[in-house]
Image 1 (tube, rainbow, N blue to C red):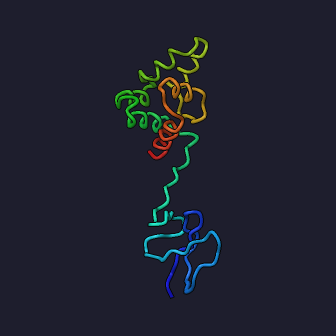
Image 2 (tube, one colour):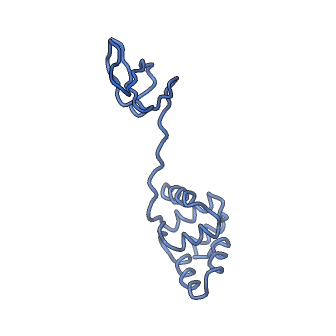
Image 3 (cartoon, rainbow, N blue to C red):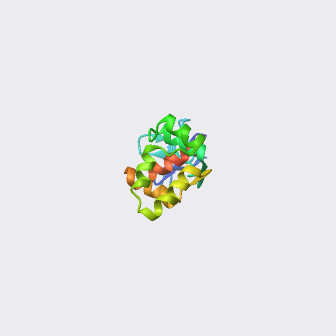
Amino acid sequence: MPRYHVVEAGRVVNTVLADGPNSLPGVVLVPDDGTAEIGWGYDGTGFSAPALLPSPVPAVVSDRQFFQALAMAGLVTEAEALAAVRTGDIPAALQAVIDALPEPERFTATMLVSGAVEFRRDHPLVEAVRLARGMTAEAVDDLFRLAGGL
């Protein structure tokens, strides 16, 4: 008996053995060609693998992960990333953001960037850097994903 994929709303939802016509409304039986699995898409002519979901965004990364990811993304130099981790030196791109903050916030931001042992994705300074650098929230999420994998 041949195998068929049960397709609903353009997505394979099951694979069945069938020998007769389909009588379920909204369901299409497509012959199994050996490539598709449950969750794959079907556009009427062929199957496509589902898009991979991005990994979760880490809420916290270490200072080493953070500065290494910044360097890998080209946002700071490798030398600046090493200096930030070794001695707490603030990379020029981050210093420019700190310098643009209102005076009462500069000291706290400087202490955070130069002395933190971890960086939180939800910290307001991360958002300030994002806005100052013209980054999207998704780009910052990707940066934290990169950092979390290091």
